[in-house]
Length: 275
Image 1 (cartoon, rainbow, N blue to C red):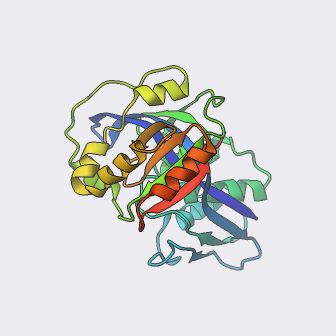
Image 2 (cartoon, helix red, strand yellow):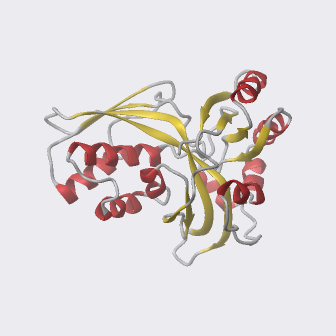
């Protein structure tokens, strides 16, 4: 059985304040690309296992603690079932602001639920997702949703204007862990995320982590400037805590032309928004 771990995009990300529990209160509009990592379930395994392959698999190990094995273990602890072995085709850059491990964990839960004939909206499945990480519930859904709280309090939004929109992801090939970005956030509350039509909300919004991320990785500024200079863009922004940036385009042709104009050595993915 195969499942795509869809790349996560924050169309807008407003950081409101640091909570007493150490997490940050955020308001975000999640969307997802049609592409991402690939996860294969080998259900004839006699013991749990994970094999990591793919262009970004180097340096990642299937041994020890990781979100894929944690998700599988949490599912088995809650619902039972036999051992599961997985192959993860790591196609997305690591520590890149586009879901990564959270999307992989969510794909594990979807695969195991499908194997067992369980609905993906099973409340216990969402509880497992929330315990694995703040982004995992949205990644489990993998469709446009608004996230409040830690980002795990979800509200579905109208997907009509977003479905199939041409999307270009660009990363300057630099990893950027989330913790250091939040650590240098200036703690200024710049106001709430609006309500309304998702694309209008995104256009009126911002990413409050962009400036701290750029302070750590100035290459992000170069990516944003390159995307902003392309014809046919509807929205240009950094996703999550970076360093991946994205642009929404009017047409596939404009997206593909922009991809060809990006600097050599940058990672790019030409795709669409998933409904």
